[in-house]
Length: 129
Image 1 (cartoon, rainbow, N blue to C red):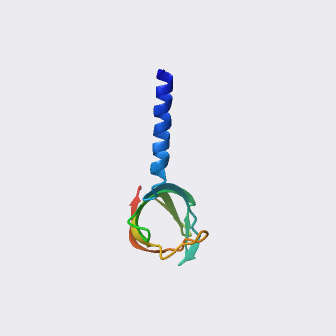
Image 2 (image 1 turned 135 degrees about the vertical axis):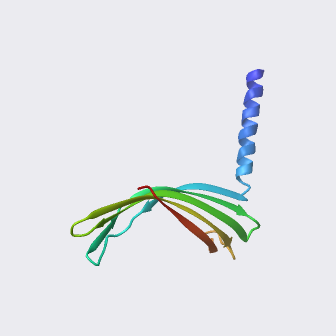
Image 3 (image 1 turned 90 degrees about the horizontal axis):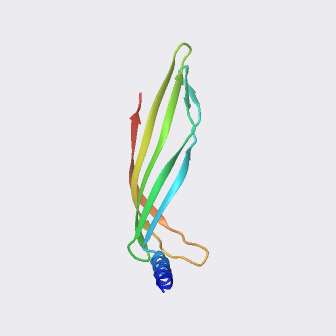
């Protein structure tokens, strides 16, 4: 009897979570990013940034069927190498990104969901040494 009651409670919780997941008013995701930069040369200095990876978290709240508010937070490590004819420098840093936007969905079909996206963001550079 206790096993059946426990199973009924577990199934009820799973169905409740599934039902809340279909609400579609909130969206949260975690994404990986790649930071791919090119080498540049000028004034006899060669700048070589490192290739790195990072993580971005995204949260969205839908206000109604057409408008949503979205916030992003990301973080990655970055290193810049500067080489002249005689000296080499390396600047290691971390970069944090915070941004927010308003998302407007004018219409949608079964296959297409076009949107307009406008907002602002800020990058924080924190040199390590």
